[in-house]
Amino acid sequence: MSVAFRRESDDEHLEPTFELPIPPGPNLVTARGLAQIQAKVAELTATLATLTDADAIKSTRRSLRYWSTRQASAQIITPTDASRVSFGCTVHLRLNGRERTITLVGDDEADPAAGLLSWSAPLSRALIDAEPGELIDFAQVAEAIEVLSITIPAA
Image (cartoon, rainbow, N blue to C red; front, side, top):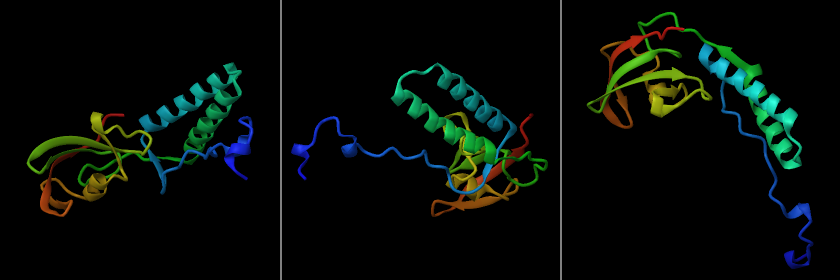
């Protein structure tokens, strides 16, 4: 049937609303990341109790399902050794001649502008298990990364 013969109130022509996509792989988090997830769940739960609009309730419930799933699947990782790059470590590096400092964190905690890089990002994956002083190929450039130092951030 042509769209011209449908009533505007028909919901069947609306685009379906899908669940928020969960990043693949384990849900590794720092203690800070878990606290952020817990705060988001608490915020959405409190917001949901005040809503009256059906669309807003639906949207908030969708977000709450995502964050509740992330909270339930969270695996706290606390780095203990700064001899090799691992999840939760802060890495001071030189990338293509430019110095940067990044901390490898969970997907939901990532904020590249603040130096918080998801552990699943290509740069993070290239750094995993590297040692200070090591030169690493990255983005098809030989020895593009030099690991200068590795530290464990204070909790």
